Image (tube, rainbow, N blue to C red; front, side, top):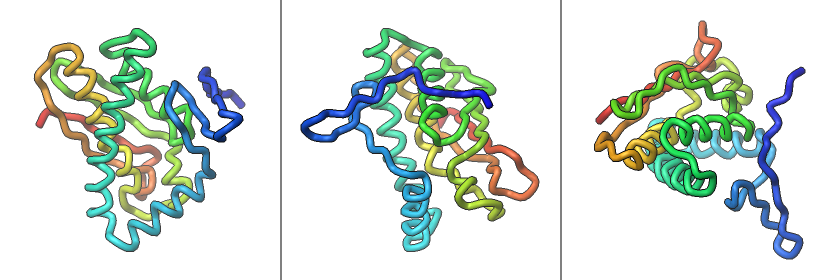
Length: 176
């Protein structure tokens, strides 16, 4: 079995117990705990409403993360987007594979294999990975704007491994 072990350090403050990675405070919880909370909220307010809330929050968080990581590592352009996908993959959300990326046009196609959500939900014949959608638009917009491109984007999930006949998820980023 090959390993996708992170090359990043996890630091734990002895006084506060706060975990940090990439200079950001982190939480470490079992996958089932996180996804079960996600499912409970979805059941209460509906998947569509919850997806909208998560999109906005995810967009903002991805934008901030990419901005801070670009500064911290002295990287720019596609390297920031690629670094983001790598870190997401290393944190157990699934494996995010960039199939296409055009920063100037504001387009991308991301393939998701081994989704944490699909592992928990199973085959339910609907898209269950919507939490990630805003992340891709936020990352794209931060990187594009840092390069001086005026493009603003949106992302949608077009496929999920939770759907019958599909073995992986797909997300498309396109200009607004």
